[in-house]
Image 1 (cartoon, rainbow, N blue to C red):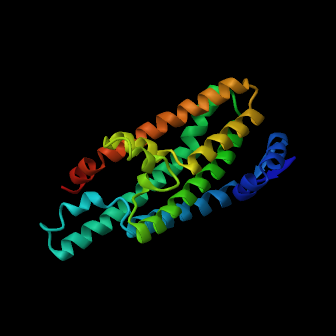
Image 2: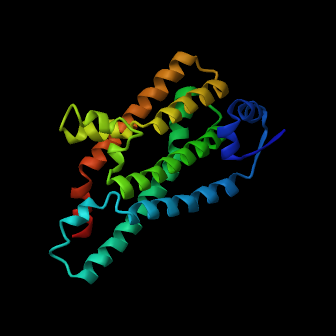
Length: 224
Protein backbone atom coordinates (compact mmCIF):
# COMPACT_ATOMS: atom_id res chain seq x y z
CA UNK A 1 0.00 0.00 0.00
CA UNK A 2 1.03 3.62 -0.46
CA UNK A 3 1.15 6.29 2.22
CA UNK A 4 0.37 9.91 1.43
CA UNK A 5 2.72 12.01 3.54
CA UNK A 6 1.19 14.88 5.51
CA UNK A 7 3.34 16.16 8.35
CA UNK A 8 0.43 17.89 10.13
CA UNK A 9 -1.74 14.77 10.11
CA UNK A 10 1.18 12.82 11.55
CA UNK A 11 1.20 15.24 14.49
CA UNK A 12 -2.55 15.36 15.04
CA UNK A 13 -3.44 11.68 14.45
CA UNK A 14 -0.11 10.24 15.48
CA UNK A 15 -1.07 6.66 16.31
CA UNK A 16 -3.33 6.14 13.27
CA UNK A 17 -0.78 7.66 10.90
CA UNK A 18 2.04 5.53 12.31
CA UNK A 19 0.01 2.38 11.62
CA UNK A 20 -0.41 3.46 8.00
CA UNK A 21 3.24 4.49 7.74
CA UNK A 22 4.49 1.15 9.08
CA UNK A 23 2.39 -0.79 6.57
CA UNK A 24 3.30 1.45 3.64
CA UNK A 25 5.34 0.04 0.78
CA UNK A 26 5.38 3.32 -1.12
CA UNK A 27 5.59 6.91 0.10
CA UNK A 28 3.84 9.70 -1.82
CA UNK A 29 4.07 13.52 -1.81
CA UNK A 30 7.44 13.69 -0.07
CA UNK A 31 8.81 16.51 -2.23
CA UNK A 32 5.60 18.50 -1.86
CA UNK A 33 6.02 18.43 1.93
CA UNK A 34 9.77 19.00 1.64
CA UNK A 35 9.53 22.20 -0.42
CA UNK A 36 6.63 23.52 1.65
CA UNK A 37 8.77 23.25 4.80
CA UNK A 38 11.77 24.58 2.85
CA UNK A 39 10.01 27.86 2.08
CA UNK A 40 8.43 28.05 5.53
CA UNK A 41 11.94 27.72 6.97
CA UNK A 42 13.21 30.71 4.99
CA UNK A 43 10.20 32.82 5.96
CA UNK A 44 10.36 31.84 9.63
CA UNK A 45 14.08 32.54 10.05
CA UNK A 46 13.75 35.82 8.15
CA UNK A 47 10.86 36.90 10.38
CA UNK A 48 12.66 35.91 13.57
CA UNK A 49 15.84 37.75 12.55
CA UNK A 50 13.91 40.82 11.37
CA UNK A 51 12.35 41.24 14.82
CA UNK A 52 15.85 41.47 16.31
CA UNK A 53 16.19 38.01 17.82
CA UNK A 54 19.81 36.89 17.78
CA UNK A 55 21.15 40.18 16.39
CA UNK A 56 23.16 41.02 19.52
CA UNK A 57 26.49 40.35 17.74
CA UNK A 58 25.75 43.31 15.44
CA UNK A 59 25.17 45.78 18.27
CA UNK A 60 28.90 46.25 18.89
CA UNK A 61 29.27 47.76 15.39
CA UNK A 62 26.39 50.21 15.57
CA UNK A 63 28.62 53.13 16.65
CA UNK A 64 31.51 52.39 14.29
CA UNK A 65 29.68 51.91 10.99
CA UNK A 66 27.75 54.31 8.82
CA UNK A 67 24.00 53.79 8.57
CA UNK A 68 24.32 52.32 5.06
CA UNK A 69 27.09 49.91 6.08
CA UNK A 70 25.18 48.84 9.17
CA UNK A 71 21.99 48.16 7.17
CA UNK A 72 24.09 46.25 4.64
CA UNK A 73 25.48 44.08 7.42
CA UNK A 74 21.95 43.48 8.72
CA UNK A 75 20.91 42.18 5.30
CA UNK A 76 23.90 39.84 5.14
CA UNK A 77 23.14 38.76 8.70
CA UNK A 78 19.56 37.92 7.68
CA UNK A 79 20.82 35.84 4.73
CA UNK A 80 23.26 34.12 7.08
CA UNK A 81 20.54 33.22 9.56
CA UNK A 82 18.36 31.90 6.73
CA UNK A 83 21.29 29.75 5.56
CA UNK A 84 21.72 28.44 9.11
CA UNK A 85 18.01 27.63 9.19
CA UNK A 86 18.20 25.69 5.92
CA UNK A 87 21.27 23.81 7.17
CA UNK A 88 19.42 22.82 10.32
CA UNK A 89 16.41 21.85 8.21
CA UNK A 90 18.50 19.48 6.11
CA UNK A 91 20.25 18.13 9.19
CA UNK A 92 16.98 17.38 10.97
CA UNK A 93 15.56 15.75 7.86
CA UNK A 94 18.52 13.66 6.74
CA UNK A 95 21.35 13.54 9.29
CA UNK A 96 19.25 12.73 12.36
CA UNK A 97 17.36 9.92 10.56
CA UNK A 98 20.77 8.51 9.60
CA UNK A 99 21.80 8.48 13.29
CA UNK A 100 18.50 6.88 14.29
CA UNK A 101 18.87 4.33 11.47
CA UNK A 102 22.29 3.34 12.85
CA UNK A 103 21.06 3.14 16.44
CA UNK A 104 17.64 1.56 16.05
CA UNK A 105 17.59 -0.34 12.72
CA UNK A 106 14.82 1.89 11.34
CA UNK A 107 13.49 2.24 7.78
CA UNK A 108 15.46 5.31 6.73
CA UNK A 109 12.83 6.88 4.45
CA UNK A 110 10.05 6.44 7.01
CA UNK A 111 12.21 8.06 9.66
CA UNK A 112 12.64 11.06 7.36
CA UNK A 113 8.84 11.28 7.15
CA UNK A 114 8.53 11.52 10.94
CA UNK A 115 11.27 14.15 11.01
CA UNK A 116 9.19 16.35 8.68
CA UNK A 117 6.74 16.69 11.55
CA UNK A 118 9.58 17.31 14.01
CA UNK A 119 10.84 20.22 11.92
CA UNK A 120 7.31 21.65 11.68
CA UNK A 121 7.17 21.75 15.50
CA UNK A 122 10.60 23.41 15.61
CA UNK A 123 9.41 26.12 13.21
CA UNK A 124 6.31 26.68 15.34
CA UNK A 125 8.54 27.08 18.39
CA UNK A 126 10.59 29.74 16.61
CA UNK A 127 7.43 31.65 15.70
CA UNK A 128 6.47 31.80 19.39
CA UNK A 129 9.74 33.64 20.05
CA UNK A 130 8.54 36.65 18.02
CA UNK A 131 5.73 37.90 20.33
CA UNK A 132 7.91 37.32 23.41
CA UNK A 133 10.64 39.45 21.82
CA UNK A 134 8.34 42.21 20.56
CA UNK A 135 6.06 42.58 23.59
CA UNK A 136 8.29 41.50 26.47
CA UNK A 137 11.84 41.93 25.14
CA UNK A 138 12.68 38.30 25.92
CA UNK A 139 15.29 36.46 23.90
CA UNK A 140 14.60 32.86 22.89
CA UNK A 141 16.64 31.27 25.69
CA UNK A 142 14.53 32.98 28.36
CA UNK A 143 11.20 32.19 26.73
CA UNK A 144 8.48 31.35 29.31
CA UNK A 145 8.04 28.10 27.40
CA UNK A 146 11.61 27.00 28.16
CA UNK A 147 13.61 26.25 31.29
CA UNK A 148 16.11 29.03 30.58
CA UNK A 149 14.16 31.66 32.47
CA UNK A 150 14.04 29.39 35.53
CA UNK A 151 17.76 28.59 35.37
CA UNK A 152 18.58 32.33 35.19
CA UNK A 153 17.30 32.67 38.76
CA UNK A 154 19.83 30.10 40.00
CA UNK A 155 22.95 30.87 37.97
CA UNK A 156 24.62 33.61 35.95
CA UNK A 157 26.64 31.15 33.86
CA UNK A 158 25.60 31.89 30.29
CA UNK A 159 26.21 28.40 28.91
CA UNK A 160 23.97 26.86 31.57
CA UNK A 161 21.19 29.36 30.79
CA UNK A 162 21.54 28.66 27.07
CA UNK A 163 21.46 24.90 27.70
CA UNK A 164 18.26 25.01 29.74
CA UNK A 165 16.88 27.63 27.35
CA UNK A 166 17.23 25.01 24.60
CA UNK A 167 14.94 22.69 26.59
CA UNK A 168 11.40 23.89 26.02
CA UNK A 169 7.92 22.40 26.06
CA UNK A 170 8.23 22.06 22.29
CA UNK A 171 11.52 20.16 22.63
CA UNK A 172 10.06 17.82 25.24
CA UNK A 173 7.15 17.13 22.88
CA UNK A 174 9.65 16.36 20.11
CA UNK A 175 11.49 13.88 22.36
CA UNK A 176 8.18 12.17 23.17
CA UNK A 177 7.17 12.18 19.49
CA UNK A 178 10.48 10.66 18.39
CA UNK A 179 10.39 7.98 21.08
CA UNK A 180 6.84 6.97 20.20
CA UNK A 181 7.54 6.97 16.44
CA UNK A 182 10.77 5.01 16.70
CA UNK A 183 9.31 2.51 19.17
CA UNK A 184 6.49 1.87 16.70
CA UNK A 185 8.69 1.57 13.61
CA UNK A 186 11.77 -0.12 15.11
CA UNK A 187 12.37 -3.64 16.44
CA UNK A 188 14.65 -2.18 19.14
CA UNK A 189 13.69 -2.48 22.81
CA UNK A 190 11.84 0.51 24.24
CA UNK A 191 14.43 1.18 26.98
CA UNK A 192 17.15 1.47 24.33
CA UNK A 193 15.01 3.84 22.24
CA UNK A 194 14.21 6.03 25.25
CA UNK A 195 17.86 6.13 26.32
CA UNK A 196 19.23 6.76 22.83
CA UNK A 197 16.76 9.48 21.84
CA UNK A 198 17.09 11.27 25.18
CA UNK A 199 20.90 11.26 25.12
CA UNK A 200 20.95 12.38 21.50
CA UNK A 201 18.71 15.35 22.25
CA UNK A 202 20.82 16.28 25.29
CA UNK A 203 23.86 16.36 22.98
CA UNK A 204 21.95 18.62 20.58
CA UNK A 205 20.90 20.98 23.39
CA UNK A 206 24.48 21.15 24.65
CA UNK A 207 25.71 21.84 21.11
CA UNK A 208 23.11 24.58 20.66
CA UNK A 209 24.22 26.20 23.93
CA UNK A 210 27.86 26.11 22.82
CA UNK A 211 27.07 27.68 19.43
CA UNK A 212 25.07 30.47 21.06
CA UNK A 213 27.84 31.03 23.63
CA UNK A 214 30.37 31.62 20.84
CA UNK A 215 27.85 33.20 18.45
CA UNK A 216 29.17 36.75 18.75
CA UNK A 217 32.76 35.64 18.11
CA UNK A 218 31.74 33.61 15.06
CA UNK A 219 29.64 36.45 13.58
CA UNK A 220 32.39 39.01 14.11
CA UNK A 221 34.89 36.74 12.33
CA UNK A 222 32.54 36.27 9.39
CA UNK A 223 31.76 39.99 9.09
CA UNK A 224 35.35 41.18 9.49
